[in-house]
Amino acid sequence: MPQWKRNLYILWFGLFFNHMAYSLSVPFFPLFLQNDLGIDTGLEAWSGISISISFLISGLCAPFWGSLADRYGSKLMLVRSGVGLGIAHLANFFVYDPYTFIAVRVFQGLMAGFHPASITLIGTNTPEKHVGYALGVISTASAAGGILGPLAGGVLSHWIGLRGCFIASAVITLLAALMVLGVKESRLTRTVVPTRIMGDLKRAASTPGLMRIYVLILLVSTSVLIIEPVLTLYVVQIGGDIGSATLSAGIVFSAIGVATVIMGPRWGKIGGRIGYEKTLFIGLIGGGIGSLLQMTANLIYFGSLRFVYGLFFAAVYPALNALIIKYADHDFRGRAVSLSQTASQFGIVLGPLIGGLLGGWVGIPFIFLFTGIVLLGAAWAVSLPQHREEYICHNDN
Image (cartoon, rainbow, N blue to C red):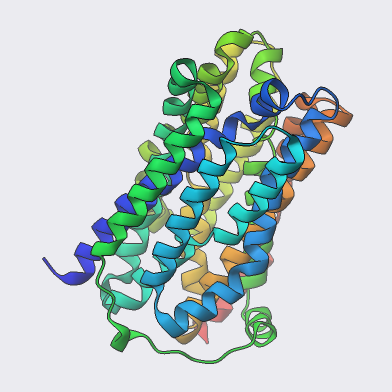
């Protein structure tokens, strides 16, 4: 087996376990804050802050870890992140007040970076003709982990409690760190080109269509994470039994992951046939309408809608990634993808904060109304003739 393919398989399972460990416990933060840490007022805001703070710190530290990866290799950063995240998960077990919990979440943000390091290692250690395939394969690892994580967390919380889930997350994350020790990184393939973020932003701004994609990624990432801090609470509000809320929420969380695994590869093929702009438009329309329909009062209906919403929304990220590759010049693709991850990171920070604040202020159903309007507005922007003309003009040049 070629070394690049062996690395791909190892990193796929490493990312799968890493994301599974994350989604094993994070969806149930609201219940942990309420039942174990005694938060009764402002629960939605506390949930949003506890989720967002980690991603905010992670985004701020990313350039530092990236510079170390350029100097010492991505493999070392994978091990560093895996071990650090495992310790952070374990530390949650010993938390008994909300402020210490936030402090642990800050530490978890400092230790983050497993996913970017995996993408970087794949991109720099895979032959050029196989890079697209490898990145497509590795992108399914997080979705697959997102399916099993909430389900496993919902079941485990009944057996060993929410604190026990933190221990399980720690063990699984450390297992992922051990797995990546089998990766072989060739430093000869790494070309370190000193660049400044402002220079990359200027080049992205001068590339027709690229900045619009980054704005869309920011909106899409925000819409995905906006419901995370309050979804478990919403499940209880619409009829879920509070005693089995973690299991019900785990099933609801996993519905989108299942839909993504089913339809993600199919949307990729459809995009190749009809164009990624049209595929993106369909995904955004389906996601927008699906969000509006989730303003419901029935648990079974809500879970079914989440699955159907996922079937359409699975088209969005593959289309956005494909458009970045098509818009960006060959020698700028790596940095263009890195900038897209930055945009996504900002959305991951904003989503839980907005969701937590809106949920506590105007009610959780309004979050679905807000998300639906934003996604339909994004679909309208994608449909504008100027978007297609920019792409055609760029290709003609």
